[in-house]
Length: 199
Length: 243
Length: 104
Image 1 (cartoon, rainbow over the protein chains, first blue to last red):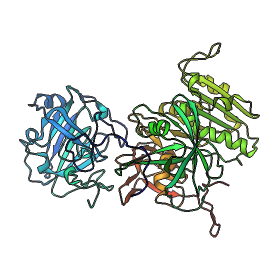
Image 2 (image 1 turned 60 degrees about the horizontal axis):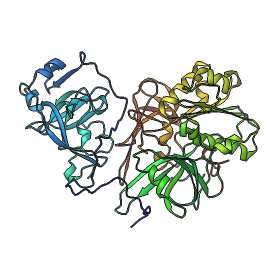
Image 3 (image 1 turned 90 degrees about the vertical axis):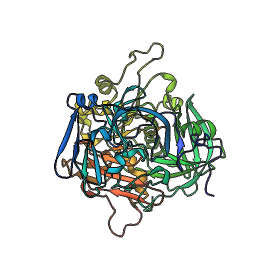
Image 4 (image 1 turned 135 degrees about the vertical axis):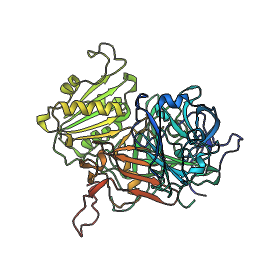
């Protein structure tokens, strides 16, 4: 046992709920940033899926709003160890957006306004596991939390749920993103505690 | 300081001084402390019994004095570390410290250029270390301090700064509430304040600005507009470290 | 260095502690040049976002990434791809104990 600060407990970490290993519960919604917050006007906002053979499918904001929406309630797990349970979102399932996309690519590189990127297998985007979310807790998604729209893939650590999402590039090979090239795990499953490379 | 990588050291709290109702100075005894320069900071690490650990950076408030190191900590509401340091920690307790760090935002007593210090709120801390280092070294370098804060009750080091120091001019600016009979109305830092309380650009002063991000932006923009050399303006912004 | 602020950044000074875990000298006083826009200046003048998940230092001129630092439990990852080179103040060969950082 190393050094202990007498009487220091830190933020509450055990409230009797089942969390992924090493996580603690928060009730606020912390904001972490790797750069300036992009401000994207809705009339210039666009979301794209680019396939491995050069096809691009695009949606304007109005087109996204016209698609059927879902209202998932999900748990969020950040690699910096906080978890937030039972968060309410509204957005469009990636299954809906991929409906007319012809692709056999296995890998996706998600890219954002402001230059952020993150990678994940295409199968983790499909079958009801991921959304392009534009409302949180009944309100339009604040810029600090990734608005106007962010990717939501709650079964992976939250850095995979790219804020300010701009598009998804489908590829035949895996291409590590912003944090994945700086020490963080390539896949990021919170239940297997895949925080860093080699975990 | 020796050319060695940093190590965590055990620091024992030996004295507490309240600066304001929400800020206190912690005097720590750190065996093996290598000394430091005015303006440098330290990292403080707290570890709970279950192994949970977190750390924050704090500026050092006074020049090197053997193994004694002074930090002034502002309590951040809902913070995780600052409430512990300002309310829980008592004399005799230990924390882990590593440092000193930072070789840029520093003042050395052999400097001869006039110095302008611009503090926003608790940004006074590393600048006070420079004022104290000047006095400790018997330096005659002229200093001017512009200290912006919300209201008079938030002044750090009030007694010490009230005493006259030859060669040190202090200007207080209040942004929300002023003392009775105070000529300048409450308000944010302006170019007029910097003209009155600072140095003309021709004097070639070294400028040190410390405070919240918005304050630092405003102060450095004003200095640049007055013609100060960008290379002579050193800044230290408070970070989003969450107290 | 104690107040929280959203969408805020620190100066490169904030890299001093984390980089002194890796380097034997202070790197924040080193002069660098941004590969994106060519702006030159000390590491201390970069805009640092973080510290979590990692520290991201951006050029004050163009906001592009100059340096990234991630500290894991048993490794650190340092990415300097955004800087042309770093000029690090050092004492002359054979001069003991002078990093340009410590007390005189």
